[in-house]
Length: 352
Ligand code: NDP
Ligand code: ZN
Image (cartoon, rainbow, N blue to C red):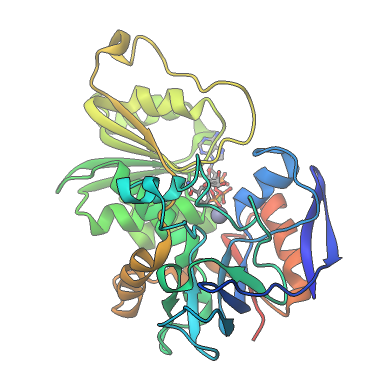
């Protein structure tokens, strides 16, 4: 089979590999729609997680089951499924402890395009199919469904880590597809005011659609000054970081009130350290919590997010600004994610 791969840091291309086969609990999936992620860009072009050779890229897919192992009970060939970006080993102590993203080691629940071949191929392998797949209802269009495995779960995780309470003022730094889903998640959790930071007009319009109340353009001046101005110098209850370079962590701490939370869902691809500002962190005593997390995966999470889309609580398909047809288009779609043209939110490749 063919797949689109990271050949080494800085280089991508098509390669041929053996079609994978399932272990007793696993499934083999044929993708129906896939999407490239900014994380693929950090991994390939910044070497964010280190060197990888001939590793098929991609971790965002919905697909059709083509083969299952003899112990798989709930899925069969022909089923249409949502495949989470994070497919943990559920029989691990980390998963039992509640850290499924880190089952088997830090970030090891993230397998596709990290520690094994990803979804940009004619077929791909899913471990523990019964615990990692979710059925895709007919009524959800593929462009919407393919946002669930990563964009929706990541953005919502940003809102969860920020521990948003009813009526909170929230800042979302970055309104690419991940930040947009953080906006939608913050609104669903009951945020009052949602101040967003970005510059691309298409993203600003989408942010308003998903629930932003105030827009800050980081190209028009310092983010801290602009957000403190908007909040009478007080800052926000919670800040979600979904874009920007390492120094965005400084910004986030500065704009968050004492007792508030900074929730990071960014993938920082470069540099040794992330800068926490000493004085605005109350010399270490401001009770400003800083958390960062990999998106939740697994079947239970996917089923819950499917419910939100199915019952029109969110409409993530609106982010699909560029829809391509055919697996061979993943190369073009991935490079769009690297170049980020002004009219782009998220490219999707429909294979069906
Ligand atoms: P995008 O590149 O599409 O969006 C980034 C956003 O950040 C844009 O709105 C951009 O503004 C804004 N931005 C850029 N520079 C600055 C700056 N200096 N200050 C403030 N804002 C800035 O990225 P995605 O939405 O696709 O992904 C966001 C991050 O999430 C990536 O790092 C990605 O790897 C990561 N990620 C993490 C996951 C997890 O599990 N935690 C899962 C998936 C992705 P502009 O409008 O100018 O473009
Ligand atoms: Zn991703």
